[in-house]
Amino acid sequence: MERTIVLDTETTGLSPQAGHRIIEVGCVEIVNRRITGNYFHEYYNPEREIEEGAQQVHGISNEFLSDKPVFNQHIDKFLDFVRDAEVVIHNAPFDVGFIDHELKLANPSLGEISQYCSITCTLQMARKRYPGQRNSLDALCQRLGVDNSKRELHGALIDADLTAQVYLMMTGGQVSLFGSMESSNVTQSGTNAEYQKVIREGEIPILRANGDECAAHEQFMEMIVCG
Image 1 (tube, rainbow, N blue to C red):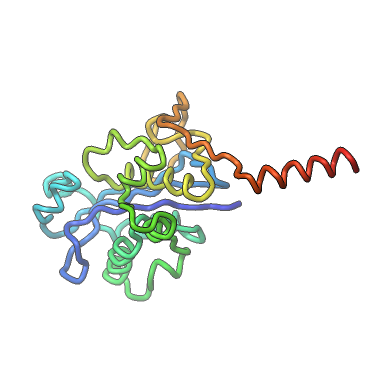
Image 2 (cartoon, rainbow, N blue to C red):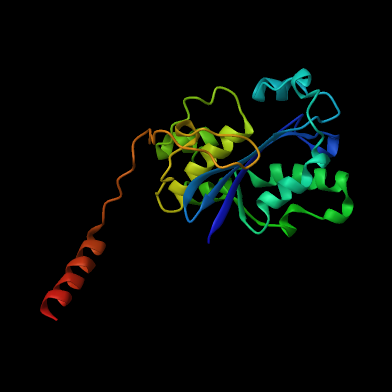
């Protein structure tokens, strides 16, 4: 079984070295290139104030987080969810830096997230595939026909879902059998959702064979027919 977890975080600011913390983690599970409907989603009390600039990006307030658990209270649930998977992140160094910081604060013996899973960065993938072009998540959604019209603010779970669709398109062009989060009933912390109606929004890119591929196909078919 090929298990991939697409992950995103929201934070109180830009740098863990400046004392900023994770306030939201969203994870989307892909098994054998299909989004399964199994999600991990948690909010955390960062035990500090959120910077105004960060709050304008994700819309999460200090008041909303005041009754949420701190990260280290649920750290085992998070590590169990990503363990032994390929973890896909858009701009991975940012999120990995914050996760490693939270692990160190919780218990230095926990080590780094890369000890529990492999890390793949879709931003690095996109820069190699589309050099010289904008490769933000919104730009990739537009380029690859992934509907991001509901993304008015950043959010860890919706961004993870969009990244999952972008990742599937960039690595083979097949998006989940089940579609995106919008076509499912999603509950938190990795419970399996019951699906209602499958909707694949946006145009599906058509990849046509080039001349060499057509010639190779004709040669192969001739070999089969003629023996």
